[in-house]
Image 1 (cartoon, rainbow, N blue to C red):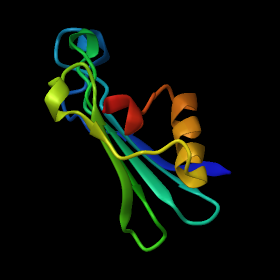
Image 2: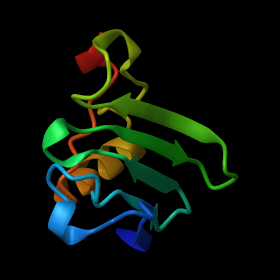
Image 3: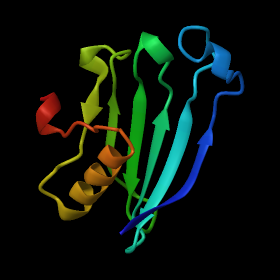
Image 4: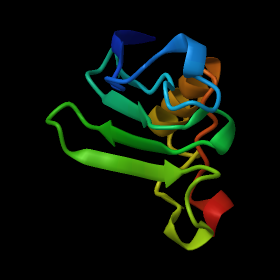
Length: 112
């Protein structure tokens, strides 16, 4: 089971009235953890209708990063990457949880 530890907006200029094209975008950072101590941080710096930009880090219980992803429509194709593998049970668990939060994290195979 995965739980959300924190979820907060990191855009100091957030303004709901301008959140589509005016610069006041919601840009949350979400930190979650599973029952064995693995944590995933999702930094969403997307810009409303201009596109998505998401950075993801999955860390083992000691804090060592075991998978990362940087993707979105605002990032050049040659700069997007992912080391997530859907055949790894822990990574698959977090990939599924991220989808429930409306983040489809591409796998390494999908970005090859």
